[in-house]
Length: 379
Image (cartoon, rainbow, N blue to C red; front, top):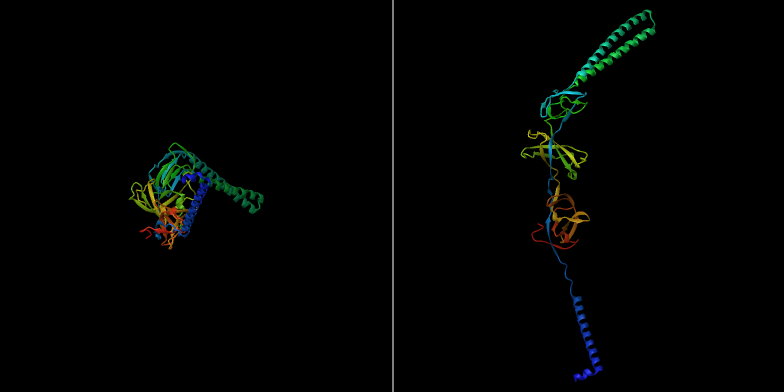
């Protein structure tokens, strides 16, 4: 019978068509059942992320800044002659202690002695002319009173007298100047101090104002530092400059306290740093000129928040942190960073006392996303 079916083509076509229709009905029933199950299934809740967080609290944190500099004299003068000439001798040597008024060097004074002698002779000649003019004025005046001469003769005599008086005054001033120039051939110390440098040797011709001896006041010393511009970003109130502790690099046990007395208004052209001078009070003798020192200053104690560096997030190029709200959702808050340290950041604004700040996994979070704080954190 089966063989007969294979030989009956119309019957065979009807059997194949019926099989295909039966398979199609079965597939439709399966798809409809799967769709009904999918529509009746409830959506799965979103995954809750685990994070680490800390509760922040304001604290007083002094911004300690250190720098390396050197000891320099506060008062240091380059002394030179007020007249030019050949240097005969330089008495002062580097390191010598000198007293105010002490002779430090001399130049050849022969020319200035000759000028003084010439000026003295001019004074004597002017005095003689004045004596003669005075006698002539007295005689002509007496004759005019008796009517034996004219008024014109008396006026000419009076003119000669006044001219002689003026010439004597001019000669006297020239004499004083020549005497002063002779005195300028000796270089004297302006104050008690120590010779720190010399600029000329015996036999050398020196010009007016050329440095011959440099004298420094040993009682007033400054610690001078070169500070980068970034250090002034959060500078304290200039009306109350911070105290600076200065210590020797060779012996940190030797310290002194000073105050900032001068900050350069312009940066150095080569190093782009600003020179800061610290006036040292009662500097120990070990802090000699040129000694290397370290300076430490407490720049301020404003309340700040300390956060680990992993808590910081970038929002449009500005620093921000993720804060966990009471509903366990995270919100992104912009913050103001006072300074960056090795393993933490110091936040000066943007957070409130008790805020829960996410410290791990900040790059996987989204705004208003629910999170769960790992046990042991956030306390």
